[in-house]
Amino acid sequence: MLGLGVAETEAILLSLKVALWATALGLPFAFFVAYALTRWSFSGRGLLNILVHLPLVMPPVVTGYLLLLAFGRRGPVGAWLESAFGFVLAFRWTGAVLAAALMGLPLVVRAIRLALEAVDPKLEAAAGTLGARPARVFLTVTLPLALPGVLSGAVLGFAKAMGEFGATITFVSNIPGETQTIPLAVNTLLEIPGSEPLALRLAVVSILLSAVAIWLSELLAARIQKRRGT
Image (cartoon, rainbow, N blue to C red; front, side, top):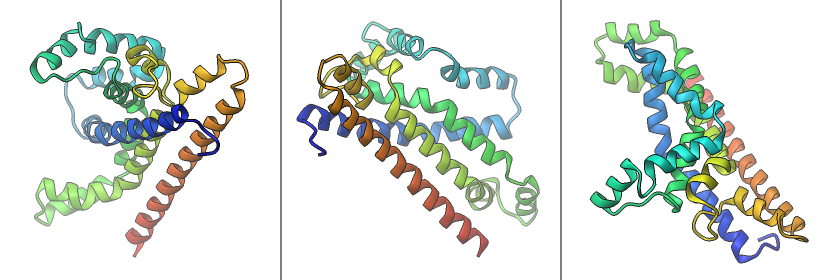
């Protein structure tokens, strides 16, 4: 693959696995948070909004350190997960998924929230007056109209997961074959004299993967808009 070695190929495949899992697991939660911030009124709404956007403004290393404190093997959540289910996050690729999903959460929530805010409430109210239950209104009116924004959020989350570095290296370290994603592999190669060409090839692969993801999202969004118009 473009003259890459085994370790670099593993980093690419691991990045794809981490990004796909982070997107798949983070998207439903991000949608729920965006829907709550857009449609519900509750006392902790402002606090929730702040907490969701904290990873966007905090140094990624701080986010990774907090993850290590909470989800490490000695952390309260991490120790419980290991004792109850034998599930370990720290220094595992599963921890990289958690770090990537958390770092991309503000971007995904923002994109979905803007899409939900653009849905005309009168359309939802009209469906309700015609006898549709709230769940049916959501599935037949709200979700289809917000779907392009959901796709945009998913692509943003995927791209962020592909490029996540600071929180990942702090929480799960840089272990080849286990937690070494493309950004971590590039960082390692840049520290080795004469490895700059290999690092450049990895960077090109990362750009191509992100570009393909954006192209696919635009294609799907265009088809949705076309179907909606017809």
